[in-house]
Image (cartoon, rainbow, N blue to C red; front, side, top):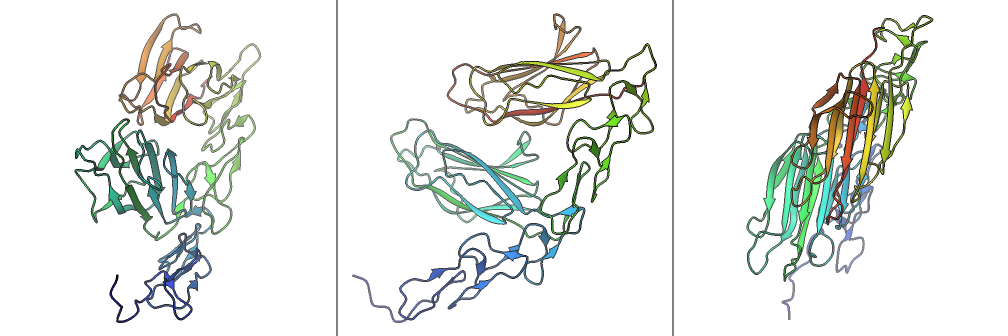
Length: 421
C-alpha cells in the first residue's frame, strides 16, 4: 500500500494538465514549450523558433536564424548560414541521423544490452557540444570494465585527431558530470564484450549545442543567395568562388574551367597553359598540354578520366567490405598531390590489416616505385599531403579477407599543379 497524499504535485516545465482530476501531466508536443510549473496549456514557439524535442521548456532558433531564442531569432543575411548541429551514427544501437537540431538523445536501446555491440555517434556543430547522462548502468557481477562508453572531442569529422574526454564503465560512472567539446565535433562510442555471461541495463544521454550568437560566412567554393539559409550551396562545375560570404558563383573565363563542384579557383583547360589567374594561353601548333589522366581498377568506384586537374578517390558508399582490392594511377606532366578529407580504417583489435598505400612510380606500370605512405588504423594521414614529382602516383587499397568488422573507409582529393607551358 501507499500513503494517501496530502495534496497534488505541480506539473513540471515542459508539461501541462488541462483538466481536473488528472493522474499524469501531458508532455508539450514538438514545436511548443512551457517554461512554468502548474501549466494548463503549452505555448506555440514564435516565428523562426521551434522546439526539437517533446517536453521542451524553451524554444530554440530554427536553422538559418540566430539569437538568444528569448528576445529574438534573426535570419542570416545572404552569403552566410546558420546550422545548429548534425548527428551521424552507425552500429547496432538506435540510430537517428538528424540535421538542424539543438538537442537530442543517445542510448543503447530498449531493454538490456547485448554482446558484441558496436555503436558510434558523431555530433557536429559550430558551437559548443555538451553530453550529460540521464541513466547509466553498465555494472556486471565481476566488476570488469569491458562494456565501455568512450567520449572523444575530435578535430575533424573523421576523428583522425582526437582527445579522449571520458572512458566510462562499471568502474567509472558519469554521475551528473557534463562532457563538452569546443572543437566542433564530439564522438560517442559504445562497445560491449563479445561473449560474457551477463547483460546490463545500458545508458541514456542527452546532447545539446549552445545557441548561436551569429551566422557563419560561407567558405570559398560556396554561396548563399537568400536570407535565412541553413547551408551554403556549392558552386557548380565550370564556376568558382574564391571569396567568403559570397551570394553568387562566377563562371570560369574562356579557356578556363573547374572540374569539381565547390571549386575556389579555375584551371586551364586541356590544350592551354598559364597560371589560370592572369591567363590561360593556347598551345601553339606542334605542341600540346594535357593536365592529367586517371586509370583505375578493382571493387571501388572507378571513374577513368582525362584532361582534369583534380578529382576524388574513395572506397565507395557505406562501410568497407572484406577482400577489397582497388588501384588508381594518376599520370601528369606536373606535380601530383593527394590529401585525405576522410579516413577511418579503425578496428576493435587495432590491427593494421586494412591498408591504403601510396607510391610514386617511375613509369605507368609502376615496375619501379618508392612507397610514400602506408596508412592504416595505426597510421592515419591527418592533414598530411602526399606528392609525386615523377609523373605517376599510385594509390592502392586493400582490406582483410575474413575479419569480423567493417570500417567507414576513406575519401581523398587529388590535384595536379597548373602548367607553365
